[in-house]
Length: 246
Ligand SMILES: NC(=O)c1ccc[n+]([C@@H]2O[C@H](COP(=O)([O-])OP(=O)(O)OC[C@H]3O[C@@H](n4cnc5c(N)ncnc54)[C@H](OP(=O)(O)O)[C@@H]3O)[C@@H](O)[C@H]2O)c1
Image 1 (cartoon, protein in one colour):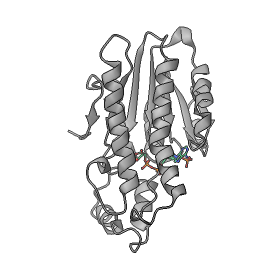
Image 2 (cartoon, helix red, strand yellow):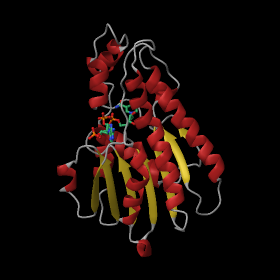
Image 3 (cartoon, helix red, strand yellow):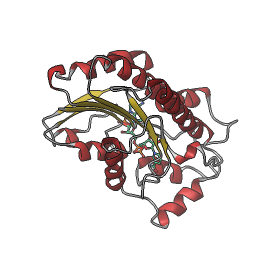
Image 4 (cartoon, protein in one colour):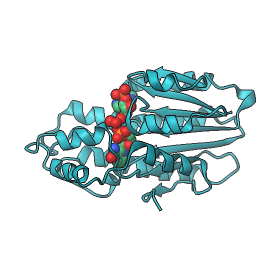
């Protein structure tokens, strides 16, 4: 059995990744604040942990619970997909509140860092394939007005990935950690960006334009590429994969 811990499976890309991974040989451990009942109905090999990643002090317990779902005598591989994220605050640096900055950086950066740390620790005894896929964004390098906190969180995630990769190295049974920019996908996150008032978020027009021009991938198409990356032989230790397609 391969075990997949996936955050942010209630909608969007995380939901599509979970659907793509459903198989009799895969056990999914899904995490989000809202339980995705339709997803749960599609598989008997699934646990759903209702959790708010802002409860950062509780992530140790969350990860211990996730690992307790695994039958240690029958593990072929174990995978963590850090997908959950928020895009807000969508405003100029001087306009964002302390609470908004904290919320973004907790969900987008601190939670995946701690989940990766716990994943490495809790899987130490498992002599199987172990991989962490961090869902990042081209916003890490391509900067737009009003997206400083989101961009900083994703740049941080990419650097964290590279550092963890250097540490883990290429020994047998090292945890491989990779970050990926999944491209622009038609999800609630995109909707929020294009529907934010242009007076506070000057880049809303760009998000409207990409939607109008049909430039957004479907979550299912992006998920297919991501699962291919996760399970394939191009999962290179410490890499930041900037081009998912091609
Ligand atoms: N869409 C794009 O164009 C695009 C482009 C580049 C990168 N990405 C990245 O792709 C990933 C998925 O984004 P998406 O577009 O699918 O966004 P989305 O549709 O807004 O979905 C976000 C997911 O994250 C979960 N989440 C948010 N806050 C959470 C919290 N406090 N605790 C637990 N779960 C939380 C949400 O579940 P609950 O609300 O139920 O908790 C939801 O399942 C993100 O990392 C995003 O940065 C997206």
